[in-house]
Amino acid sequence: MKLLTGLLAHSRRHGMYGVQRVCSACKACLHELTSGRSFSCDFKLLRVLSSHDNLETTPLDVVIAGPENPLLPVNKLSSTPPSQLLSIHLVNVLYSYCFTLRLFNGDWHSYALGAAFVLFSISSVLGEGIQPQTVSEALTHCLEQTCSPVYKDVGGLQLGLGLINDTTCLLNLGGPAIICMLCDLQRLFEAIGRETK
Image 1 (cartoon, rainbow, N blue to C red):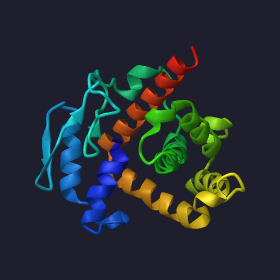
Image 2 (cartoon, one colour):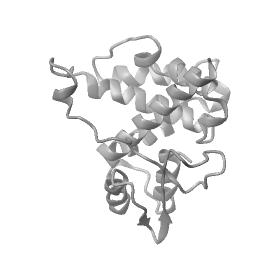
Image 3 (tube, rainbow, N blue to C red):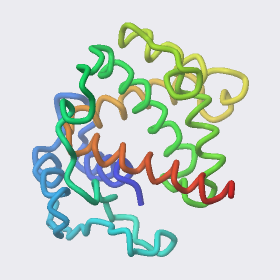
């Protein structure tokens, strides 16, 4: 299943919902993700999902793999320095990703096009190309969409606050978790390309 689903399930088993309470064992496990090896977390063996696995029959305790090839440093990707707003835009994308996973019970594979529609409708950065200047702006649009008539029956403000917590937990897990999330988004976009051909 998805990274967030597995990690939050692990964290919730230990009563860890807040920013300050993310399990250090989860952080250690995430650092093993890029190695492509199996690793142990909370006495339960988790296996990194490879591109050869069947996504429809994969057990729920599998964590999505990171990139297939090593990532280049940011300064090698472009000759211009990255925007200082990139981290703020990432918060907007993370919230939208968390919303999409909750709406699709952690499995966007069953309907990638619908999942992408949800992702783009919640994220002002991805859907409208808006560039929020603060974290508050980045989350405000997401919360407005979560509480909008389109999604109010899904959970409204209560869901929105839970998604802020999910986003915070994912951010607190650090770079490896965020990289896995971005890789999962890339796979979603690739799946859309295949569906629309």
